[in-house]
Length: 430
Image (cartoon, rainbow, N blue to C red; front, side, top):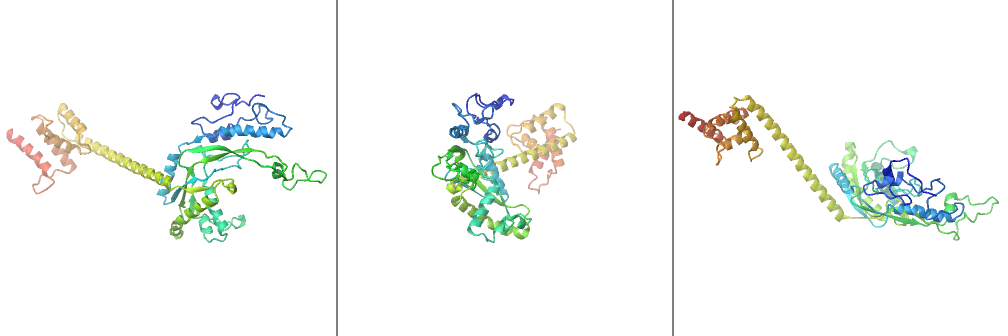
């Protein structure tokens, strides 16, 4: 029977040719493909598409074949994904730094599975970041990990209530308040290597029916009761095989002043508890068999922090340069308005004055200073007949700017005195 068609979806949704397992292409969001474009069913939805043939769904043999069909789909995601993780992690670290929070990088010591309980045709889901298209651990999961580790060590730990808002999680006793801290999503700091793993439960019917294992005649049903005569059923699922994650915690915005200092001083304790929980308990699913264990990665953290510091410094310099350029433009506009209010020169000379100001090599100088330097430069820009008129223009501009101080006792008046001497010389000659 043919594969289920993606019609009437647009042609771009048909990720692979007919008869091949669907796989996300480079540049596509793997999480979107995983959750919305599963095409592993038969066209009549009678079961999973299993190549090269489909057996009778009424027999047990179909289970093995169906699991292989799921495995084919999952194998399509066994690749390295990035999704711009590095730049996102840098922005998140910069945000944590701006909030006065703390961050650390942890790298996987073994596989990591997240979101296995999410609904999915393969029976085992996966948690994808909504924009990055990579696996991640939501901030709520990080918060739960820290709290769970504290409660496991000491259920009566006095720090639980202020840190998390309540000492107990019983609904009728939950106080209407928030804890001291904001727990950020744990996001990858670089490319993430995904792969397919498999679990082999022996007693599927027992897991489904629990204590209801008796047949109609009252005797235990041998197909349901947990025992060693059952065959293992391979169940494939998607895992993270290699990744490093940025974890971050910050003091909650709007915290009352009476708690603020205590919260800030407790931040290092939170990070230490998080480290212990990741090393000994693990995060995500299947932690009982070693999944989700992570170790601190100081080298990766220092590399990320240096990159963040460089990026912040570059942004600060860019902003300063943009501000300087804006101020210069405003000053130039002001000078242009001031020049327009002065006595006009003949059009040709006026055009030359504007050209000299615009092309003078020393940027950032006021217009009058550029003209002043052009008058007394080693290679003069002006003819002798033009100098007095330009000097008069410089004097008018300096007076408008408040820098005309020809007094001999003024240390800053040398430029004004030069202009005055040039004008007096011209008067004597005429």
